[in-house]
Image (tube, rainbow, N blue to C red):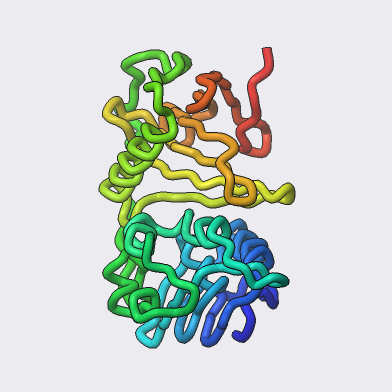
Length: 260
């Protein structure tokens, strides 16, 4: 396909043969739409600049002719650098790829930020021709809470730094329990996006760490726990304010805040 922003209706998979990017917000919108629809995205040729946002999808893969390249974002009218947008573009990339790119992205493309198939695969991007590993069965029969999950988390004074440490821990747990980790990214009409990583904690609780952002700024963080994957209820604790909210599934299967 040419420009990724030309929406392809389902059920077709998305195949990128040459896309040199464009306006970041437009790509954010279309990528979040494909993610919400659960669409498979295959990179079989060039994908550069804003096109690289497709790598935030858990259903993206690269073919042997794939080339993915980054340069710094800039304002479309003034052409001044926009480091906040550059950070936003890599914020939800897979952990190994994001770590590799940090500090390397320059005003123009460089050999370090022009990645080919082998390098992309080594940094955690699935190969389109690789067999899928079976997902481990959820631990639904032996899960019990050792302590009531409605209690707020004990938070250290430097919450931002500690969140980074906790998030990295959650990613490692997820990647060890699920092949490539288990993530979900959702974007909403108000411009807010969430990234969630799932794992089982030491007590067997099905745990999700969630970060919400709008325009590149963190607006909320929380940790949720449930008895198992299909639990009818879960309890979430705000990382910043320690507020505790209990959720119950409604008739459509969505979690809604429980009301007394």
